[in-house]
Each structure stands twice: as C-alpha cells, then as structure tokens.
Length: 366
Ligand code: F6R
Ligand code: MG
Ligand code: MG
Image (cartoon, rainbow, N blue to C red; front, side, top):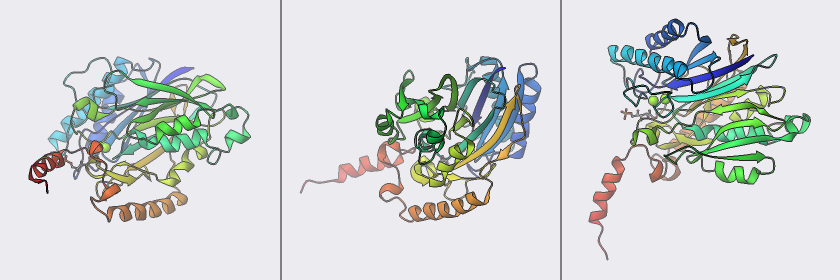
C-alpha cells in the first residue's frame, strides 16, 4: 500500500517562557485533527518536545498536499487561540504568514514527509529536536548511514554495502531550494566538507542505493530566520527515518546520539550546546536548553500506527544524559566567551550589533 507520512511541527505558545505547550493546547490539536481529518487522514499522533507540537499523520494524498497541510495549519491556529486565552508566552510564534497558501513550507512550521510503498513491516523513528536547527541531525545521520564504525550493517549486509545517496540543502540560500546529491562511500570527503558547516548545509533526505526508489529519511529544513527576516526562534527540526532490513536498524540510527555533538541553539538561539537525547515530552529548563532530541519508535501498517516506544527511555541514555549535563554545564561556565556563544553571523538576536556600532565610533587611532 502506498502511503504518505507527514510530520508537521510548530511552536505556537508555551508555559513558563519557551519550555512546553500546555495540556489544553495539546488536547485542542488532538481533537481538531481527529475531527477535521476524518475521511482523508488514515491515522495521526500528537507529540511534543520542548515548546514544539508535532502532528504525525498518515494518508494517501502525497507530499505537500494542501488539504493535509491546511489541517495542520488550522490545528495550530486553534492551539494559538488556546495559548492566547491562557496568556501563554509566544502564542502563534511560528505561524509567520497571515493566510494559508497551498502548503505550510515557507510559512513557519517545520515539515518532514516521506511517500512510501509500505513494506510488510514498516518500522520507523520520528525524531523531534528543540532549541537547535536542522544541522543538528547531520552528524548522527552521517554516522548512521555512512560510517561502519557506527553502522556495522554497512559491512555485514550486502544490500547496505552498496551505500546511500545523500541530498544536502544549502539552507542559507534564501531563494529557491538549492540542493546537491552525493553518494556514500565514494563522495564521503565531499559530504564531510559540507556537513562540517551545520548552519549552511543540511541533510534533507537519504535513499538506499540498492533501492533508489525507496526514500528512507526526510529532515525538515526550514530556516525561520530566512522567512521572517528577523529572529523568531530556532528552527527546531524534525526527521522521519525508516529503519531495518534495507536500511540501518534502529540501534544503528540511535547509537550516534551518544556523542551529543555541540550544535547551535540553546538560550536565545545564540550559543553552542550539546544535543541531549531525552525522553518524550521533555522540557528545556537549564539556560533554555541544552538542545534536546527525542526519538519515538513505531510501525505503520495499512496507514495505521502501532503503539509508540520512547527510544531514549533506557538506562544507557540516563548515563548519557548525566555526561551531557556535565558537558553543557562546563561550556556554560565560560558564558559569552569564545566558542560558548555563536559567531556574529549566527546570533539570533541583533542587539549586540547596535552596541558594537556605537563602540566603533569611540575607537581612536593612536
Ligand atoms: C531559543 C529560545 C529562547 C528565547 C529566550 C528569549 O530558541 O526560544 O531561549 O530566545 O527565552 O525569548 P524572548 O525573546 O521571546 O523573550
Ligand atoms: Mg522550540
Ligand atoms: Mg520556541
């Protein structure tokens, strides 16, 4: 059966600053999608990580479908009303356009979609990150799909040994989407050259070379900054990753998160922060961070979702979280200094520019 998995995510208001949507907002989104998706949404699920709400839907209308996207947009508008009525912070923050037009791409919400021919068993992982941007997924994906140190399947499975094709997007470019397609293993150095700059080049999708017709990864690549022209919060990406058989298994996809790489984000979207793997529904209450990522494991069969598994809810990840906490606290100790804060081009708030302009006037030639 051919189905589309559509994940659409937005921050439309939260409790105590930018920490978590209220229960009433989540309930509203659930009821709205349940009621208004009847007849064309086969199944759906609502998740939240940090201050973002994600709607995961299955249907048969293909990617960028206006009916599916409008359903999500309208559900977020309803949640915005609730956030406003509760006096919550940042109500409607990610809904950057006044009127819906066609699909939500370029309107604020993040989108990750896969159109797939369902396998007999179709397991996948849905990742949701908060207080960071889409480049945060690049290192774990690169390691899971191209590095035998993390993915023994590249050595042990003859199908996977053929490698994977990476579609990488230049997300700094503000006009039409600019992408490049590169093959692992032969283009590994080119892939690494691009991915080292996680603010500019982002993995958007991956396909198995043994099955080029089978997309296996979709990452949201929105740059809110590019849409709004000014700071509106970090992009807080989501990703859908099909696992097992022709693709890396769930363990191979999850294990790179043990590194908790430093990524951009955290407080005011302007710092470097380790990416902490967390349980579902986690908040961000240390310095508006650290950046967090949750992973939900589930299967889809004839468009119906199985029950979900919280993949970072395991003793090993408890230990990882302890170590990542130390990493986050240690970097924080140097405050604004050096690599603790992002470079000038990546700061999400521009107040400092005015201050520097004033200071420039006071410099004298000796
Ligand atoms: C980062 C983030 C928060 C806010 C910070 C200030 O992505 O959402 O760290 O930047 O709490 O928020 P405002 O400017 O809304 O007061
Ligand atoms: Mg967020
Ligand atoms: Mg936010």
